Length: 220
Image (cartoon, rainbow, N blue to C red):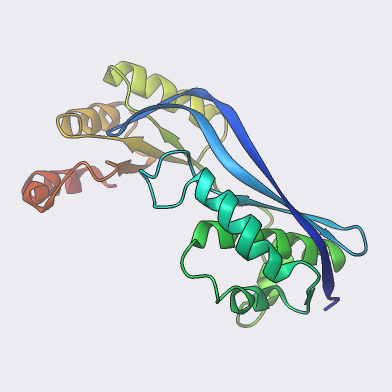
């Protein structure tokens, strides 16, 4: 395996408008935020990673602000100028920094990407090389899409049909208290065979267990 030596790591804060607002039990989101990691090696190879954080610490404790700070002052200095023999060595190099798993993962992903390019491999083939038995990776993966809460069952199924036509193979619907059983019944009536998931974004408690158990009938 050809090693890489890290010349520099840069971070880029981005904000992308969503195709349509994503409505969840938390509220509505119309933008996707992230910190993109650009890692440049001494040989001029560029690897990219993503720190999947948001502005507000609602999904997890890390934010754009905390990620920028921890990356700039703690994580990047630990890696700049270092030679990486194996991508799997990175977590140990960052062990002095507690937590901040999203920030670490973004940098680690950039290392994997640069390492794959340095060895003239697809990223999936490099991943496969570290699995027991080095299995042959598939050339394609089924992808899913998350669909926010819509005003009606009809509007929900219309969006599902549109996403299926675009090639998405798994559908994840956002639900909330008061908009769950009726929604799934209506969707299953129209689309009985799709691969379906539900996500309530922590809107329920254990007291809702008996109610939620009714969802077992819908082949989720």
